[in-house]
Image (tube, rainbow, N blue to C red; front, side, top):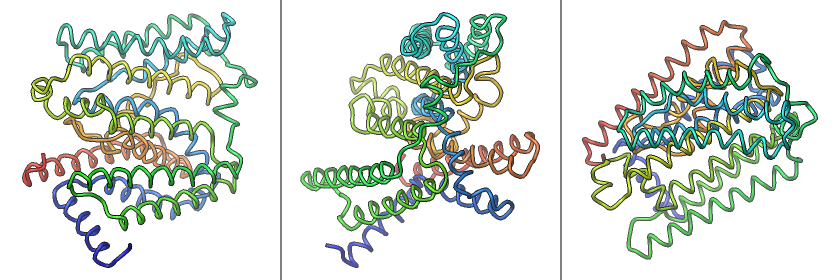
Length: 398
């Protein structure tokens, strides 16, 4: 039953978490609202359904790469080569599919497989020789960029063909309007079911749990947001299938991180390696698997980017891809100190990055301005993370 006392309890619980330094996604969401309001005031086209629809499609590729970066950040490590690995995967896909005439499914496996092997190599070097991840992946950034150029040879840019399903998937596939609404309702239903199940399990163990009021408010707010967002995107082309694919990856990774023994081990190692080792966690295996997943997701992101463009070339994975993927993970809330963050950090962070890029493009400002603003937002995100960390330590929540 909903009651005033329950509402006060839910509100007090949120205030207590914020005072303890657990800010959650509040700083990112607040910053995103400010960014959207400023750009909308400067250009009325910014919040049009057409621009927001394009923005969601642009989020998928680099957002997928950022999802892998979140994993290594949870361990307190870094991967500086995600851009080069994504470009290499795109090059392998293009060469095997177009020049060698492999079936597309086999070419996709080859492209993703090369990313998995790169992560395996990183994990081996890290766990076997104790090399810092910064050095390993910096070497990988240079080495795999060279390998990408060698794979492409003198060809330069290779078109994937606009009639191939991978290009249509990234450019032209949108959910029917009814399917988008149905997906929104089913997603909220699953979310509410997970919260209720967790609350009952904690209540049965005599632990503090969420009340029905808080669960109802959260689920209702999410339903209203998703239905309105779906309606607005349907005014143009609808909800892109590639964006849905990215969201599915984020949700699946969040479930893996929060519902499996492996996910809990990742947070434990990121919080304290020695404590995790003494608790019986195979730390080396965690590092190995996380580096493999990060590089694999970088390869998937590179393939999505190539499909979005309809081609792969020497510039694939270069430019600002590397920096944007890492910045998205940090801006979204993944801590550089390890042990804190979630899969949704990649989603929130990449929306902030792409919103800045889209807004400045509409204002016809130079790319230099975009880099400077993104850098300022990144520094602010790190400052918020540092303050939050100190507050948690001061209140005994670290």
